[in-house]
Length: 335
Ligand SMILES: [Zn+2]
Image 1 (cartoon, rainbow, N blue to C red):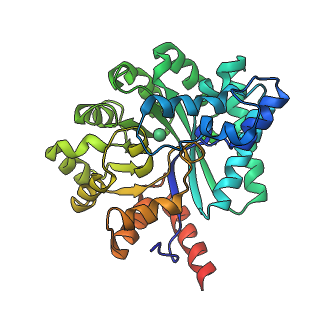
Image 2: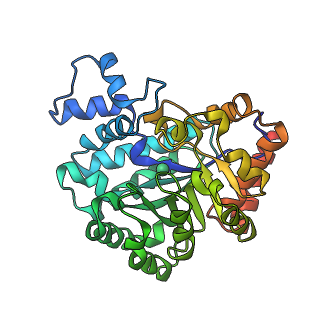
């Protein structure tokens, strides 16, 4: 059971992977975009995983619909605001939302830097209305190549004081981390935190690279880390954390049997690992459901669930005083 005296935290949650089906539908009507169907109920399977069969391509295709309808900066601001609302409605106290400004700008060639500003604006507006704490992580989408990632990075760094970190996401297999060392030198110079999607499509070597060369403090997914005992030891010793996303790993086919998810191994090795959503709207999930999965499918005990929650607090990109304030706030709500 979720320990209600501790905060509920989501550290790996894509803002541009969490665009509501109703919003996509509305924006498509507003922007005269032709959708594959004229009935909303029939549209849902196009933007949300319904089948239980894992399929990476199907997953990615569903993800694209959300950004395909973003025709203006107002649209970007709207989905940022709604993301905050969703975090609140999901009972989450603190979330780090990540977004790829180039991915969001793509369909209508919106100015990338303005997209960053629109997202920041929408999140700020959301936080005024809802009592949740949100921080933003900028994503470099490696699938678009080295040059485009530099454009993304420059746009993000122009707003670096509004961001907490930078992530590298996308096609890990065909665009290995080595291509982006220069980008992450700039991230380090800007004093931002680093999290990297690694060990999802590629093996432990990709995780080592993210840690050593990109200076990753956290690894998104990191599923394949379990294949390398020395890597697990290194991560434990150096407190390199893993952001696990159970349903996502199953739906993308990264793991074929949820009950065998290596999160068990990570916990056993004393790694900092926590539960997260990834792209909740596309996956048709929310964070509390992932905790239920951990209990029912992986057989986690209450102690293990509490440990995951404690890890999330420690892993969060926040100062010690912020951590203390968040803990006190949740504890006082319970008393
Ligand atoms: Zn992700």
